[in-house]
Image (cartoon, rainbow, N blue to C red):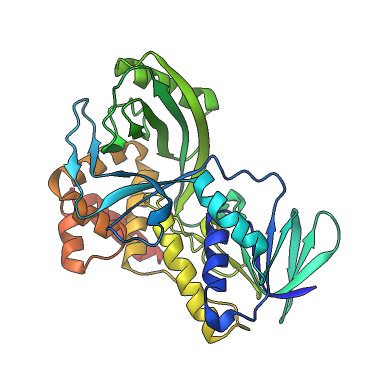
Length: 382
């Protein structure tokens, strides 16, 4: 059977793209195939983003934070981020809402199967399934990411890798209005390491031990770091409620390029996570709108996206520094939040600042390392 569009993977990116496509009246006659692997569990994910009130997914937000901290001190200075809030969506809530829509929508065929490989010709993408047989689509969107795509990259490649434990205490110890974006008080050990802490009540919080580095650790090392951190915070009487694990690519490699004449990568596979920070949720909402806009103009043509702009360059320069001196990240981020208002930094990370604001942000740190990185890449070619 043939389709207008195929989406491989029904995680956040695939789901948001499918919903955006079926919500466009001009595409109401298009048929969409979604192939999602059997047993794919997205319910243990947590997605966070900052936004002003009235965000399109406010109805799914489980918790909001009004203050954040980035620090390497035990006594952290929390700053208000008004008019923003930092919002948390649980994977279970997201998929409990959208999965029935995907499975029951008249335009969508939802297939639980594994994709073995995809063949493309001038007009079609042929999707071969592990159960046998194949499906065809004029345009295929593929969210399956592998670090093999970055093998041999001329650009720096790091990972944002983490394990998170959600705990519940018997005593009230947390302030649920405050989030620790980056607590660099943990031993750095030659890397950029921090604890990311999201309380949801006075007795419950997610502790995520996160690194910006080249290689992941053994699972036991993340667990030990979290338990040591809790001990230092004099939190001893607790139980682990849930666990999450992940790795987000950090590279300026142009992952957005088409995989073939009929296949476009999306999600992490398409470079939708911001290379310098790993934030992806709001970027995913922007990307699906861009794709739907292009598809509306020409549903027969593979959408082509390009993101080599000045923000891409800023990310490249930071990653170049972390690639060469992986332990430098803590001072860079701490100094930035010490010297500039968090609202401006969040606006910058959303890529919504103008050049003079960006100069102000970059001047918060010593400019010489960034200037050297710029000229290194200027001579090599961007």
